[in-house]
Image 1 (cartoon, rainbow, N blue to C red):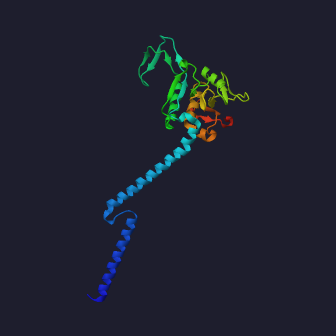
Image 2: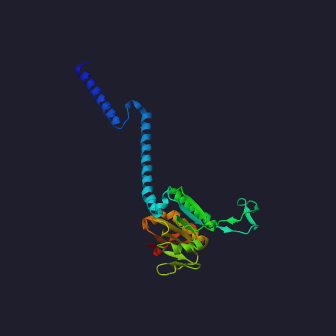
Image 3: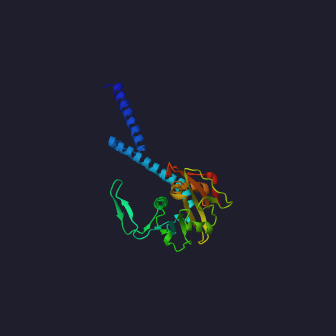
Length: 282
């Protein structure tokens, strides 16, 4: 072999080694050994994708915490603390012993008489309670929650509490006993307590209120009233509270407030809207 050929061979070998070294260096920077092969490379790509997914979940969790949980917990105040006792008052009914009650087994099933049932809850109380409990659970309030039937209430006020409804005697007492009460409801109207203004209601809608007030019977405690006129008014109020509690936190922070909501009788509870012109903040 002549000198020119040897020189060309050395040059080619040097170039090849340099290229190999360069590629190996790039792969090492990426954390991949050249000996890993295609399987190792694919594994590395999978790890990158898993890492990106974890980062995405982290940012979603941070966003949920910042934009939903923080403002929502401002609304609830100490109610969101599992160490704090919360009472939820619901309306209950008594029926005369022997009154026949009928139950249907499934949508198209047989209908039979249910004996020996003398105490009932309205359907809207059950729905409202489920909305409230779901909301509390999402905000990690899962302990020290007691449901109190109004018919068995000995007169509890020295607790943090939520009252479902707007026109029971417990509600009428709430309007009188709590501090910073924005609205009250009587048999015919929603009335602004500061000036006696009666909220104008439009036919075809169910109206409700959400009140957050200071409870003078226990230091730093809170009383909520969530209810309205009839079934749709109360359901609309509890539904709005459960779906928009973070918006209430962004608007009112940790202050007492009162709002008016309404839902269409034809469109149902999911059509609920807040009538912001009636918002009251203390």
